[in-house]
Structures are given as C-alpha cells and as structure tokens.
Length: 446
Image 1: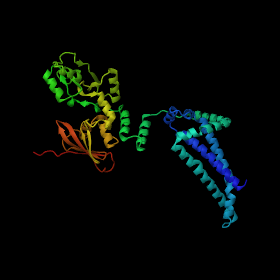
Image 2 (image 1 turned 90 degrees about the vertical axis):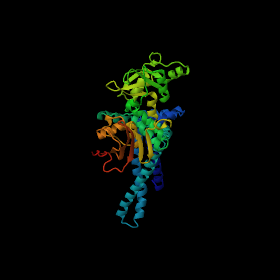
Image 3 (image 1 turned 90 degrees about the horizontal axis):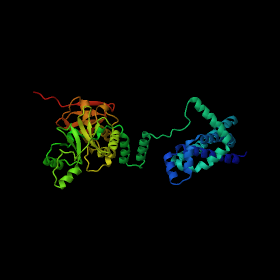
Image 4 (image 1 turned 135 degrees about the vertical axis):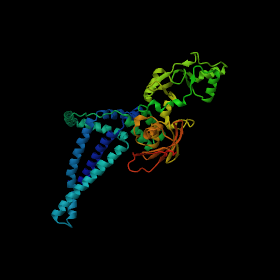
C-alpha cells in the first residue's frame, strides 16, 4: 500500500473513531429531562434516544467493538504509513539501525497523537457541549451498526451480563433524581446565569422544610397578640387598632389556655355594622389547630392541609404555648429574599463584613446568610439567641460575645432577658475555622 493510500486510510479510521467517541459521550451525557422536553416539543428522535438510554448495553457494545477494531487497524496501518518515510529522513543523520528505531517511535507517537486529538478529545468535548443534539444526530447510523453487528453484540452483551451477575452488580443505570441532584443542578444553573441567586435560594428552602422545625417560622410567645374571652368591646377594638393581625387566639385566663381563635374579618364586619364585639359566645370563635413544637415545616403544612386551616398554636411538651404559626409564615420561609420589602427584616447587612441580626432569627437563616457550614450543638436550639445561650451557658448580657467559624457574635441589646440585637462581624480566622471563644464583661466591683 502506497503512502498516500495509507494516509487516506488513517484519516478514514480517525473519522470512524471520532464518530463512535461522539456517539458514546453524547448518549452518556444526555439529560433525560432535556430529552423529554425535546420530545414534548415534537422532535421524533428524542423518545428514541430516551429509550436507548434505558437499555444502553447494545449501544455501548457496538461502540467498544468499533473503537477497538479501529485502534488495532490504526496501529497496523500507521506504522507502515509513516515509519519508512521518517526512517529515510533520519538516515541522513543517524545510523541505519538507529534511524529505523527512531522512525518507528516517531511514527507511533504521530499516529497515537492524531488519534488522541481528533478521535478522542475533540469528539468527546463536542458530545459534552451539546449532548442531546449530537445523540439524536448519530442515533440513526448507530442503529444501523447495531443491526449489522448484531451477532457480535449479542455474544458480548450476554458475556458482560454474566460477568455482572457473577459480581452481583446491577447493569442498569439508576435514573432516580434525588434532592441533592436537584440542588446541585440549581447551583450549577445559578453559576451559569440561568437562575437568579434568589430563585436558587427558594429551591433550597423548599428542601429545607423537612429539616426545619416549626419553631423557626413561628411568632414567639412574647409577640403574640391575643384576646381573653371576657375582654370588653372597647378593649378588643383598642387591641385591633394597636396590633392589626388577621387572626387572634382567644384564651381563658391566660395565654396557655387557648380555647380558639377569632378572624379579624369577623371583628371588622361587626365593627363596621356598629355591633358590639363579645367573645363570650361561640359565634365568633373558631376551633384552633394545636400542634407540637417538634414538628417540621413539612409536617406543619400537612397539618394545615388535613385540618383545612392556615393558623395554628404551637405548644411544647408541657402543653405551654410557645408561639403561633400561619401558612404565610411557612411560605415566607420558602420565599426568602423574594418576600416583599414591607416584611420585617431579621437580618440586616450593614456592609460586606458585618450584619445586625435579631435574636429570634432562626439559626438556619443565620447559616444561609453567613455561609457557615454548621453551628455547635445544632440540635439544642432554634434561634441565634439560643446559640448564644448554649455557648455562654447562661443568659447573655450586653457586650457578651462569642467567636465561631470566623465570625464574632456580640450582644448589642437585651430586653428583660430577651436578646434583641446581635452584631455579627467577620473576623480573620485563627487556626481552624470551626474554633470558638467567649468573652464577657467583667464583674462589677463593690
């Protein structure tokens, strides 16, 4: 075979190998969701590629048969195509035996480099760049090769299936998409500019509902506006004007004896009709949903759905009221940064290295805002105030501080043992990030 013929044959073998490399990578990298979307848009090739992905054994067997055959042929033809020419060229400077050895090595390196570059790297990068489109393009020709090579495909497929059974391995790809997969795709889409940062946060918040307790979204006990059953008309009207909410718990004697709730719409209707407002009768009071404080937000949503309510009272193991929660509270947790500007902000970023955070802020929100991997004793508290109490092992006082994860948490204001504001400042971590230190004001002298 002449040198030009050998060169043409090598080019043909490289093209064949490139085709099968492209076919292999494009099918492996194709996204099932994207293919189904293309099928819904009317592309008839997309369902065939999806079906091929479900049972790819014969497809990849053809690819391996072809690639190995082409590699062997390339080695045989390549050595004969370039070795004599390179040997003759090198014989002007080296002895015949040395020139022959160097000619063989140069020919081998040249052919190998051509195959690596044009038959492997380039087509595989093409297949990864737009896998669904390339997979649909090569499907028809791959189906032809699968038919032509069917006897060999059957033999190798059965042999590989037997080996998989012998090793106790599953030969089928697991197509289940987990929550971690969805979060990873959302993060990748955000980095590529396909999703806004706030939209990615909403997706992450949805999956956090199962791990966040209802206490992280509720209105705490000290902030509940409620009525006693024997409150007068004047007192009820004054409370509505002072603390306008959509729903008010109704209690007997104190807040820990909740007997129901009253809807503000019913109160407004009576006020507009100049009717006296009294809670001593049951016509205004609705049965209240009571839930334990250990429920997750997902379980809370289930309770709302089953009871067909959007308001619940949260109690602890001692049947004491610890807060109230509404459907809007849960949805605000999901929406995160997308909530309206009129909503109260518990976390206010002052600059790139400092934040002013309310003590009742759920610790999960602090984790997201500060991008801290974890807090110590995470299961022992629900809020930033709880974190400070656990770390200090006492009720915090003004100017008390805790250093954790490269941040300083300093108590700025305390009102009747309640931590109102905490100043969080980014500091240069010393040693490991997850170290902590405590500081407190010195005891007064007498």
